[in-house]
Length: 204
Image (cartoon, rainbow, N blue to C red; front, side, top):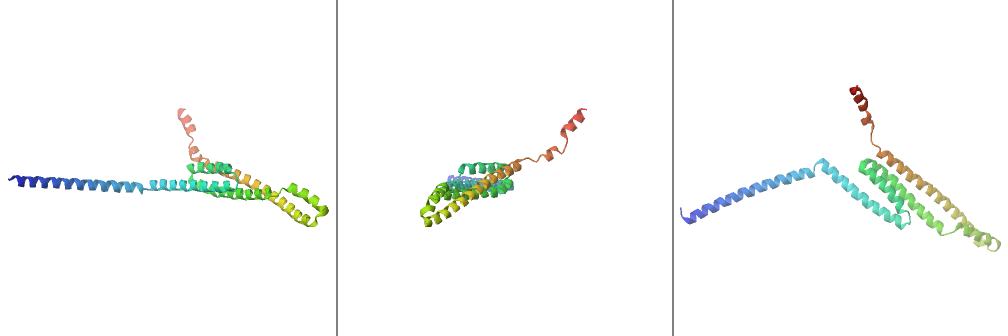
């Protein structure tokens, strides 16, 4: 066989080997990709991805709420403490934590309303207004009428502020109570079999 012919045969054999190797690699890659896709789409992985997405959304929501409370001059620290309680429950039971979220939302609404009442009350010192009212009674009847309304309004705001303080404390304690209850483990299955009694009987 001439030299060119041998070279051609060698090249053909090398090309065939390369094609076999490439085909084999393609099959292996396809199998790996299919396996990876199957793993990524498996139920446990989907659940983990969903839980991770919920945690990210919760953190973003917490940050937005903290900003809103800070702008309203409400206690971000108190909210953060309660939010941490809910997040701790979420590690144990996401469903139980989801049931606590409405309570946390209600706490935020009450805290914002309280902050607005506090700001309104700070605009008028009721004690000072009452003093001005006592003075105006003697010589300024028109101002007296307006001051009487301001004093009455200040007293209503103060009463509403007291109600909101009570409601805020009650919601916080209710949330703590529900979180404690949700964190309790199910002990009945653990106590279903009297392990200690059985062991003592066996030890006879």
